[in-house]
Amino acid sequence: MFPQRGRSVPSTPAARRLLLFAAAAAGTAVICALPTPGDLSVRGQYALATLFFAAFLWITAALPLAVTALSIPVLLTLLGVYSDIDPALAGFANHLIFLFIAGFMLANALQKYGIDRRIALRILAEMGTSPRLLVLAMMLATAVLSMWVSNTATTAMMVPIAVGILAQVVGRHAVRTDADPAAGFTNMQVAMLLGTAYGASIGGVATLIGTPPNTVVAAQLDKLLGYAIGFADWLLIGLPIAVITLPLAWYLLTFWLYPPEELDVAEARAEAERSLADEGPLGPRGRRVAWIFAATAGLWVLGGLDFLTAGWLPESAQTTLFGGEGATLLGTTHGHQGMLYYVVVGLAAIPALVLADTMEWDDLAAIDWGTILLFGGGICLADAFARTGATAWVADTFFQALTGTPIVLIVGAVVLLVIFLTEVTSNTATATIIAPLLIGMGGLLAGTLDLSETGAAVFLAVAGGVAASFAFALPVATPPNAIAFGSGRLRQVHMMRAGLVLNLVMTLVLTALITLMFYHVWPGLLW
Image (cartoon, rainbow, N blue to C red):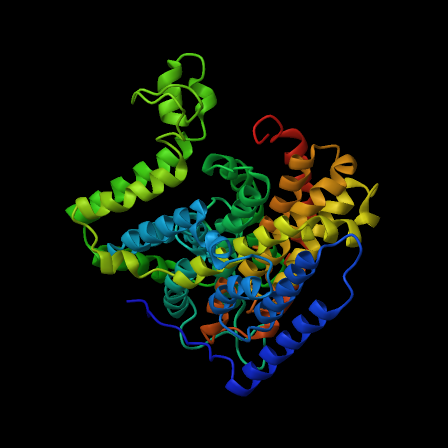
C-alpha cells in the first residue's frame, strides 16, 4: 500500500513573530500619522494603513493567515474606518464564503468514501504505460480532483500515492542523473513530485471552488462592483486555461527540465490496480455521495445556461429556476434569485448528504476554517477600500502611467507581478491583497483596454486571480508546492529550476490566452 503521511512544517518562532508584529504595527502607525493627501480622505488613509498591516503579516507569515484576517475588522473599527464593528464583520457573511464552505464539505464526503482516491488510481492504472505517461497520469488525476476538492487536500492525498509509485518504479537503488548527482535524486522522482504539485495548482484554476484565489476574485468583484461571476462563467474562463497549460507544464517537465529515465512502470501500474482492488466496491453510502456530488456539479453548470431556455420556458418558470424580477411559479411577484443559483445549489447539497445517511456534522465540520476566515477578512478590507475611496486613489496615484500602454503589456505586467508576488507569500493572500487594486485599475484603464469600466475591472482581476495559481518556484508560494517539498524527496533547487522556467513560460502563455479569450470568447457572455 502507498504511504499516507508527509512531514509537517514548523511554525514561526515566538521571538520573530513578536518582532514582525511590532514592525507591522509601527509601519501602520507611520502611515496613519503621515499628512493625508489632498484627494484622499482620512478614513481612506487609515484603510491603506490597515492594508499595510495585513499585507506585511501575510507576506512575512508572522501570524497564521486566518488570525491576521480576524484582526482586519478590529483594526478598521479601532481606526474609525467603520463607525461600529457590525459592517466591518459583514464580509464574513458573503455568499461566496458559503459556496466555499459547501465545496469543502462535499470534498469531505468524497474523501470519506475514498471516491477521490478511486478516481486517481483508475487514471494511473489506465494511462501509466511509460515513465512520461505515468507522470502525465499523475498530473491529470491531481488536476481533475483539484477542480472539485481543494488543491491542498488533493495534493496531500496524491503525494503519498506518488511516493508509492516511485518506490515501485525506481526502487531503492536510485539512478543518479543530472537532477542532483550528489544526492542521487532521479529525474523520474523530481518530475513526478513536481508534476503532482503543479497539476493541483493548474487544475484548481478550472472551477470557482477549485482554489481560494478564484473565489477571492469573484467575491471582491461582487462586493466592489456588484458584478457576479457564476459557476458556469468561471468554468468558461478557467477550464480552457487548465486544458492548455497542464500538457504544456508536463511537456516542459518531462521533455526538457527533468526527462525521466527509461524505467519499467509495469509494477507501478500493477500496484495502482492492486490498491484500487483493495478499496473494494463502492458501498451504497458511497454511491449516494457520488450521485449527490454529480447532481450538484451538474446543477452548478446548468444554472449558468439560462440563455438556452430563454424564450421557450414560461417567464415565471425561467424566473423561478434562473432568477429574475418578474413573478414566479411560487406565487411571489417581486422576483427571485433562482433555484439554480450556484450558492443555493451548493448549500442544498449539505442537508442532502445528511438525509442520505452519508455524513454527520463532525464529518462535515472538519474543513479548512482558516481559509474561510481569510476570505472574510479580505472582503472586509476590500469593502473598506471601496467605501473610503482608497481603491480609486491607489489606482490614480500608482497606475496612471499605464494609460495608453499596449494591452498585452498591461496584462503581461499584471500576470508577472502576481506570479512573483505569490512566490513570497501564499497565493490566497496575494489574491486578497491585489484583487481590489486591480479592480480599481479598471476605471483608470477602461479606455486603454477598450472595455467598459466594469469589463476592464473584471478583465484585470480575473487575470490576477488566475496568475496567483501559477507560481511554481518556491515551496511557500502555494500549498501544493509546500506539500510536495515537505515529502523530503525534493530539494529546493529542483523546484526553483523548474519553477522559474515555468513562471516565465506561463507568463507569456497566460498573457496570450487571457487577452485572446477576453476579446474573442467572453464578450457577450460575461457582460
